[in-house]
Image 1 (cartoon, one colour):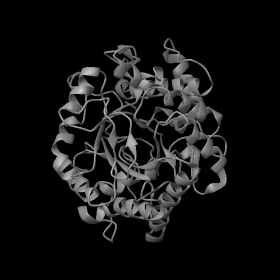
Image 2 (cartoon, rainbow, N blue to C red):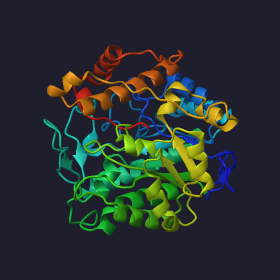
Image 3 (spheres, rainbow, N blue to C red):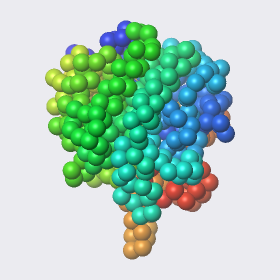
Length: 413
């Protein structure tokens, strides 16, 4: 019987020392030139001593002109190689594998960060009041973005990271290509499910051609985008089957988009009680994934729930995120039995406020901001502040993100 303590060899040869993964959270700790600095090193050094079998970074952009939010780190070339090497070393010194999540926001680019119209597969805007309609990418621009993913991956390997994760979830650019709602192209990049998945497959192939065989290439994939007429579970299973035919080392399952979040802790109580939001889907794609290991992130909170999922073979790796923002040693606590349950803080708003605003959306934004504040505290050498309230969180959100703060943001679990 497989347990949480067991190592996991990936197809590329990289061995994860156990089955608990620190999943990606967008740290927004980049410097003024979108470079990593000592804050990100300090944060990851804490996580490196937290007992995890794998650390996944959050939202590293492949184009400085296209950022998901202020403070994103970007990798386009080797200009920040020394700082990237120091970041990788912060975890490698502790013997913990680390992979870099590579991303392009597409239409979810932050307008305050880029100062121009976002790009997307098609000119389909987000379903939010006042959202900017993106410009459809040209064929040459699509090829350039594919190359950017490959170039960034090559830099990551040079810097000493163990692999990369292609972000194909949560409504970002790769997801936009996969969904018929946002990809209305009729050329070689859209028109049917096979052509809509071509963008992701070309990124995987081009990265693999630029890195060594022992460098891990992983994918974070939506089980669905939970929108009528959008990317479905059947289409997602077809993508998993196609990825299984490529040199992919791990597929992490998540779900949802900015417009229909399923990954930010705001799910119904019945969903939260099941603990792992996407475990049912993971069971349904075990055969399609073949020899590629599966990770599931979203909702895991108890040692019993995590152990059961791995022991039953429903997934190979358990991903946790939000609990690690206040308990950096969360994996160690689970593995040693010093904690049976990981807790998260959930801010709430007065019920009367619901008469004038969408309190569900606003509560989600506040809770994401609260957890981001904890990452910033750790990055600045401070301890998490469990007593941080709504007002301090809202002020910090406005300071970091300006007027776009009130839009739904990327999810952390």
